[in-house]
Image (cartoon, rainbow, N blue to C red):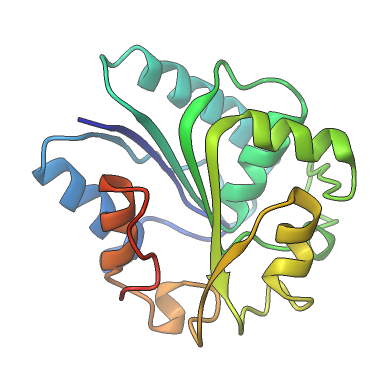
Length: 196
């Protein structure tokens, strides 16, 4: 069984219908250990607080038994992971990391504590070293990556991105709710994330 950490994004309060909640519920039904914390002050986040909770939750997850460790981040949750990797605060390397609809950090320069420079090769190396396997998925119509997901994340990190056409920011407000592909991906890294 897998040990899974799900990290939501800005203004997300883990509401019913959100794909994160579906993912947590479906994996728990299958017997997986799922950590799905509410990050503090979701409407007015401070990265120092989000970093602290990430480290704490990941540490607990590492103590939660055996099995593959999988981390799924969405939007600001992705940047939270990237910053933790870049600053060396992650307690260990995980098996798999999914960055879902990561926001362009240049759009969040006013966010207290955010210091992510995707053009820095040290950041790239830290992200790639934070997990045995890193996957990036998003949409071709995401307003939070106006330059495109591949240009914003894929090229700087040296990875190919998975594109779900027309899915905007993969958010409930965009009509993105139940997501079979992400459930399948946690169970099998070769699964097609584009399946809705």
